[in-house]
Length: 305
Ligand code: PMP
Image (cartoon, rainbow, N blue to C red):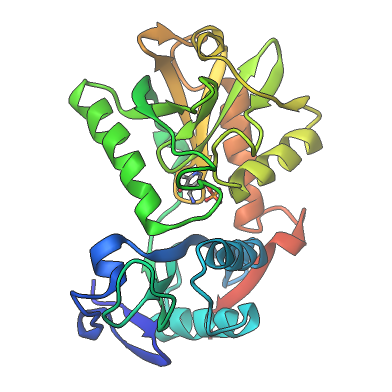
């Protein structure tokens, strides 16, 4: 689909947007980005960006860490994003890629010029009748860490770590990898955070365990507590994953994606667990505004004329 995108102050067709092959973005993956989901509420005729402010804050955090200064404020970026979405007139669930990148023709240590593109595309939410059942493995690839390539910053080049692990997992017959960090403790998936249910508690590694400070992870901690579950953020051993009753990956893109086995150890009944599915339902209800709870998480970015 040749959608409209916002780039360097203009709204143009995606096929018309260009970046130099010599740009540090093209050569070295020097960019910081966000993947933001927007959920269409058919009854209200409104499209809600989910936790937009938190995504903009994280974009600024990443830009600061990698010293790729943003030429725009979060408020400006928000208005550009609305313009890009409205140009497409989508009345459907939408994913938005928002990327600040090293433009021009410098090297990997240049800090300017920095440009921005914002690319919306239709992407439907997980269907409750088609919830994934993922087979995971513990990756032999180690998660990048805070003193090498900090996972806290959402930098394009970081994703090559996920690529090694993901392609190895697929090659070996699994759906997804789970990373351990340098300390041997569980970190996250490739592009998503991880939760398990063990002894009735919902457990997730802390944000100091070589993970991205995931907005979905934070959301689920709140939603699980709202629902009366006990949530614990603590470091997690590999063998705990084999003994878990339920497990899922989470992220803006993944939403809640249940894992049913790890290295061949079947979890629970070997199908998506009850707590995982109920959290997915709560998540979709709150993102799409089907429940009035947490209105502070939804920003209207488009509505039916
Ligand atoms: N970890 C990594 C490495 C990711 O790329 C993502 C997706 N942004 C996540 C976790 C989940 O983060 P969020 O919930 O903010 O999308």
